Amino acid sequence: MNAHGAAMNTPVQPTFFITHGGGPCFFMDWSPIGPADSWNRLGEWLRALPATLPARPAAVVVVSAHWEAPLFSITADPRPELIFDYHGFPEHTYRLQYPAPGAPALAGEVRALLAGAGLAAAEVLGRGYDHGVFVPFKLVFPDADVPIVQLSLRADLGPAVHLQAGRALAPLRSRNVLIVGSGSSYHNLRRFGAAGGAASEQFDAWLTATVTAADAAGREQGLAHWAEAPAARQAHPREEHLLPLMVAAGAAGTDRGERVFTDRIMGVRLSNYRFG
Image (cartoon, rainbow, N blue to C red; front, top):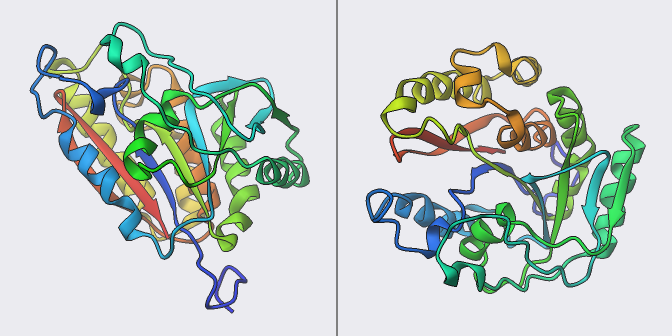
């Protein structure tokens, strides 16, 4: 048996926190707004992600920055539609398709795991995948053949409760379920470019040191108090794009984190992290 209590021949998936990019950034010409290759390196990293996994996942649970609900909420449709929750982009980006199946049984298990940790949760019908899911996963699993369950943030946006939610979901990893937090390591739309460069570097340095700390308890303590970090509120005036990291970190258990991607994009530092 391994540390997660799974048989050695059962894949134990890592967890990830990914930056999902700006709107439909991988599927449009970015040159009118910034360099044409602004998002290319992040896109290449997303395409390469499956090759880094111990096995093809049976399903994915994705926590997106773009869904907040009073209770943790879980998509329970067998065939979720897409929510085009971005604005002002080229017309063709509103015709993107990503028909990945849902996983109603897994949605029920997610709800039960959260409830078992004292966290009320609800299964939701009629709620599709937002762009924090379908935009990056069109690159990660382009054939849309891996079932996905989307989990909301809880609307009070407390970091500790999102770490707790991640801990509750950790057993799914031993069942070949990939857990991904989809947000952004820097998210201040008013301060991209030169205006945000220094703050993004400061916060990224703290975030990377915190995520990669050897002591998991210290990592969680640091993340729970992220707002006290250098340039924290310059990097995240509102925390919804950072909180998916808390779920990924909570689900990591004692597995150490590492920064697996970093780049300066549109003038600011953006990074992705893996645990396990």
